[in-house]
Length: 392
Image (tube, rainbow, N blue to C red; front, side, top):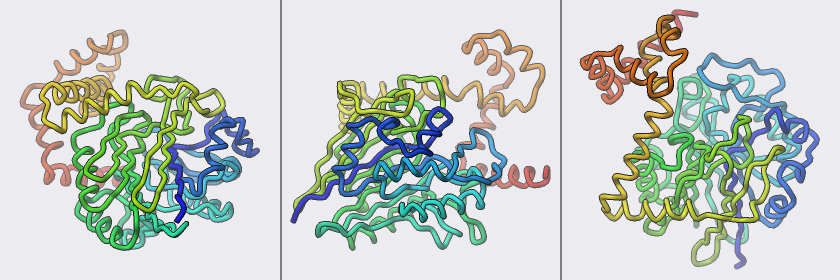
């Protein structure tokens, strides 16, 4: 029985800077010759399609970017050799059901398989199974949910993470395949250190049959873990998704993951790709030293090393403060012209201090209770959803 090679690419989508190259199908100008050769040598390849391909769609009302490109940009994705795309992500419904359906029709036209969404909560295509070279490989995809991509009985949406259901489905799928791969869309963005909850979720999915779990969505390389007989990648980073013109330490590189499935197991090989002006290319240096150091640090954390646990907690706390504190506090304050005026010329630290001074400890405790308690969280979400609908 011969080996089966599958390539897993991270977040991929055309943007303004390379849109025409995608439309013209110029794969080597976008991805470089060596990356193209890697795809040519693979038996199958998958990426996360981080947006909505539509020529007519109208954006939904949301906070944050609505990611869109014309359907004919699939020329480059098809020419590269991508055989399937995951749609279980946070942008696939940016242009509503019409935009999503247009994208699915375009993927069918280009003979590219897709999975991760469905017409309603009972009709989600969560996985595909490959029967190749005498092996059955099941690819399962799941995402964290937001209001606009959550399915119900009468509404299309993505396959959302519900731990009981997902782990039950994984256990059932593993009974009928040789290898099970999970593509998980979620976690903290723009950080090398994923959250404790994500690490717990990965262990539970592995305990229920997942052989390989890959975290996408974070736009940053994280670290890896070999857990029991499973391989866990916490943060794959972008493949080709240059949405922002600014290149940070998080968005400059990503991992193109090669999994080789044999008769007695699988082997993992990582390829470092770096961002370019036109897309991405193979990084000749292949320097994984920082990635490997984080992986060793995580291994010490799992084994109960207190110093490693403190470093992870400190990194996550810094991320929360630097990325979210000012934005979150302003959301809780509401539209406030006085804040706009007061914050205009302040440094980030001064902004934090100012916003913190506007809340009493009792108010912060109330916010904490709303966020941390499942019951209050659900009630608050329902109320805000009603309020939004009333605004319409």
